Length: 371
Image (tube, rainbow, N blue to C red; front, side):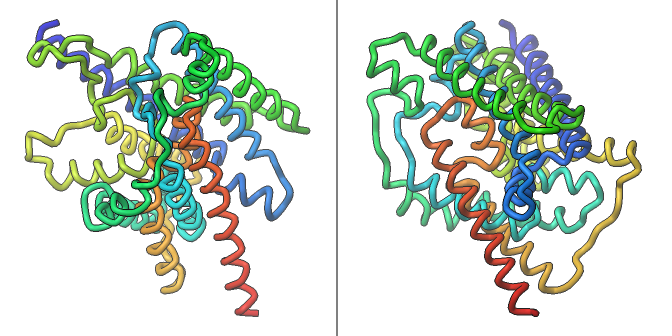
C-alpha cells in the first residue's frame, strides 16, 4: 500500500465513522434512547420500555461482534478491551462515580452530546467540564491518583480477560468458536427478553434497539476491518487507522470528548489529528441537531439556578473522572465493551447502575429536605 492510498483509506474510515455517528445522534434524539433515562423509568414508574431498548441494543452488539469475529472480519484480541488484566476495582469505582455523576448532570456522555444538538447550553458546560476532568484522569493530576490506587488492584489471566477467551482456555476450544457461541447465547437472550415486553413492538423502540446496536457493530467493522492495515508503508507495522488507542475501537464518549477538546485547542499542532473518537463526538451533535430541527424540537436551554449549575458541574466532573477510571461510559463499556463480553465491562455496567441508583436516592433526599 502506498502512502497516498493510506491517506485515502484514513479519510474513508473517518467519513464512515462520522456518518454512523450522525445516524446515532439522530436515532437517540428521535427515540430518547438513554441509559440513565431507562434506569429512571424503572425506578420511578416501573416502566421497562427504555431498558428493553438498551437490552436489545446490547444484544445486537454482542451478536454482531461475535459474527464479525467468527467470520474473521475483526480480531477480538486486538480491540481496546482485549487485555489480560481484570481491572475490577477500577471499573467498580469509576463506574459508580460515573453513574452518580450522570444523574446530577442530567445524562451520560452520549446523552450530553445529544442534548447539545437539541439546544442545551447546560449540556455544553457539562461536556467542557467532563472533557477537562477526563483528560486530567488520563494524563494529569487525577491520573496519578488513579494509577497509584485502583489500577493496582487487578486479577491477571494467561489469556484475554473476557468470557469467550476464558471459557475457551478452560475448555480447550478455539476462541473464535466460543466467541460465537457465547455472543449468540447472551446476545440472543437479551434480544428475546426485549421483544417479550408488552407494547415493545413499536417503531421507535425497534429503531432504538436495532439502530443503536447495529451502529456499534458497524463501528467495530469500520475500525477493526476497514481501518486495519497489516503493514504500514513507512513503519511496516500493523496499524488501526484513526484510533487514539492504536487498537480496534468502537463508540465511547468520555475520553473522545477529551480528545476533541485537545484537538480544538491545539489544532495547529500537526500531531493533533482527527480520530474515530473525535469525529464521533462531532457527528452525534450534528445528527441530534438535524433531527431536532427536522422535528421542530430544538430549544435553547440554560441553567435554572445556581444550585442547578453546581449539580451539573459536580456531575460532569464525576463523569470525567469516573468514565476514564472505568475505561468507558454507558456506551463505551455498556454497549461497546460489553459487546466483546469483557469481564471488566460487566463490572463497570453494574457499578454504573448502582451509582445511578445512589444518585436518584440523593436527589430524593434533597427534595424531601425542601418540603
